[in-house]
Amino acid sequence: MNPVGTAIFILIVLMGLPTWNLHAQGREDQILLIFGDIPRCQVGEGAIEGPCPTNLPDLRPWAIEIDPMRYPAGASFRLDIGLTVAPGATECAVLFNLTDSAVVIGSDVCVSNQGSADLLPVRVRSSSFSLAPGAREYVARFTIAAGGSSGGVQSVRLIVTWLGR
Image 1: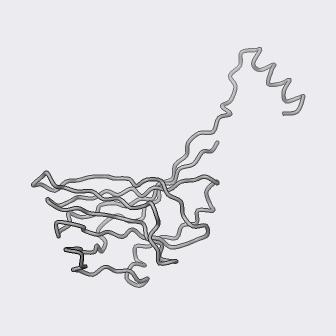
Image 2: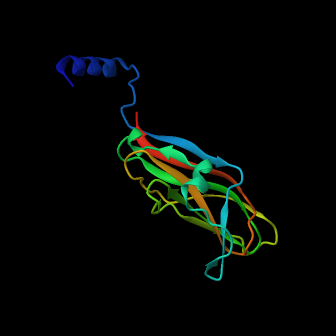
Image 3: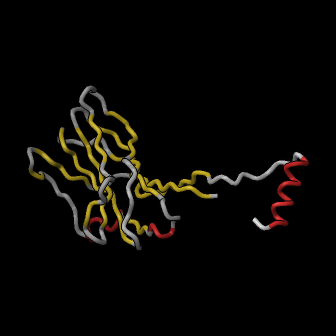
């Protein structure tokens, strides 16, 4: 701070006037990826029993372009899923990079409904992960790892957090 700025700041403190908060505060963006039903893979005994779309034409309707460079350095991402899990089922989700045809490492989440005879509504968040730099298309992919039926996916959001003023 220059000498004039320092003098003004000292004067404000001595007069007992409120000072502004110079500390960085947490910021969050919530990007809605999907609201409603999307394709899921049926997985049973190690083999895919149903369609598991992986190519652009099948998944493009649910894709969104994200460029992590639009956020400050150090921004972290988390996948937030709202779904209903059928009795005896385990459902998993992961963020899939359509541009590079690759799973986003660290974005996977799984939830089970082993103790209830009713549909289990849940909301789960993945651990923090980072995205490759530059604009790329992403989509959430779902698998039913056990149980053979799905209760349904209600919402998928990408949560972006960073420190800022």
